[in-house]
Image (tube, rainbow, N blue to C red; front, side, top):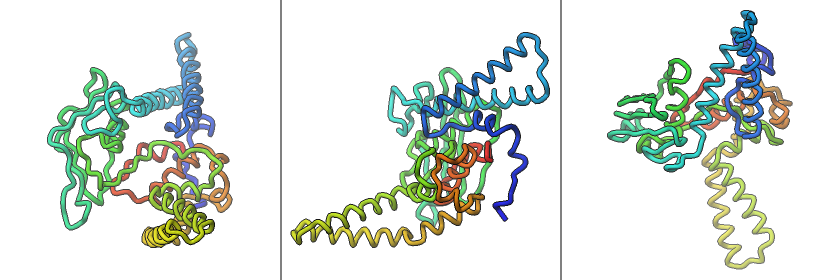
Length: 305
């Protein structure tokens, strides 16, 4: 029963401590508050050690964990920073002014009978952070249907590479390849978990909004040419929504949430009532719902409640 899964290996530390080392959220004020709390605790532990105070084993573990988290926050913040030199997702451009990516030979989908191919190959790329070379003439080859683990010490560019792929900053990643990076918890809002998941499918969400607008326009219309055009477009929207599985979408979303341990109350309640750990689960639920061609997970099991 997924609701009884305790995930004991993920429960180190208090909820407050786990929230301090969570990945960046989608809310800048919340990010600033979390980072300030993290840095304050780090400063306290470092000062204690500097003044000759003996750190307990628990303090040492927490210090190591917070230092690693601080590195991740710095890397996320740098990747998210707007570029002064180019567009965020441009081919061979910068993500954050201190990051420069170059690619030789572009990238390509390995073709097969599938419309999106058998995988993705980037024959040669380099990423530099200031004067530090994170990747030099590296090659990336991903085969469709496989799972890959990306291992390395903190601060060596793992999150940076994932962000460059997600933002299509490595030359000419095909537009037809859908990519989703899960590196932060879902935003806290008054929307329910189910509503958040349904809204994550942007095309279906936009069509549903257009459907509501067209139906309202037709109610107020008086049989003119504009009404006829709206009626024709509404039929097209109905067909598109049916093709996208609108009728089964909510049931699918609830099944995914149940599988991740969400109770009925959590599914229908506001996401602002959920802890950071549960909102991280919600971010994972969105990924399972959207089924992108390439799913990138940056430490997705950290900080789960």
